[in-house]
Image (tube, rainbow, N blue to C red; front, side, top):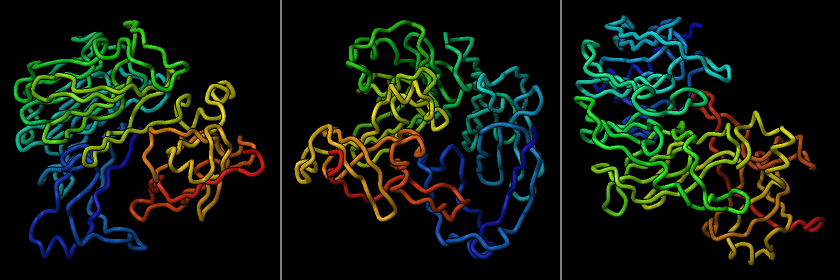
Length: 409
């Protein structure tokens, strides 16, 4: 299957006036790893006729995003039975170099079979992580192989659901990779120049015996040795209270690591009871808070939210509300409440808990709206408008009011 890589010019005026290239986008989620850019004078809306087309190329399959550094654009994609790392000239689209490896990866759920991770670029090197766990370092200017590790062969890695999908993180001279090796090699740090293993940690030692939060009874988890460990979330580096953290949202939950030694600072269980479910959001850090999010406990994704067996496990859709907010509204734990905004409403069960701060309510997405008694779910309170940029969905966070349901509460 072929896809199309398109390079469009965002603003001829800005580029010509500045006399330089725009900001680089050398890794997953951009220069800061959080999807933000420091660029200014950007277009607020796309022109009706679209952006001026500079060049376009037919490329292979995969979920990898292109990375940009200076005049280089690097894409990791698959053509037939090869995984290809290809570098293009940003101005012309001409191929500068390509590095390929044979692959036999087949997605067990029928999605495309290309690489999932985005290339990581520095001034000297390009790092890639293939769907089968091939970790490679190439010279950015030439594509020459510097070093390579076959993580699925070197560690005991249970087969991932959708292939390897956690993009590595560069922290100083260490390449932080979610390898997912049993029993305690979920996260591995490599020397970024040589590929040598520096430390490995996370697994049985920190998850054995911890309360399985959100599971029925929340009994201490008993390690089996057969767990999948890697997730589809990419590691994030942050400084919190003057301490540097590597935050990894693994399959079992959130872990904070010392980037120098791999020591676990803390870990917090956050795993669905559904075996096929995955954690995929990158941790979001704001001051000393770390946000993680997932589907409902028993749903893999919206595609599985209509299964009667999973709906029975999930139970009545709910909203979590702080005790102070609940008391001010005369709401008790277990009451049925109406959650409403200017856009719409839904009926949910109240869970009164200190897990959410005052002024904040949290509701998982729950089942499809047409499968609820009222035909409404939490999505009825959010905007159905698409974002101006590329027509993407808007963030599901909005102002709501919660009141006791006088009919059933």
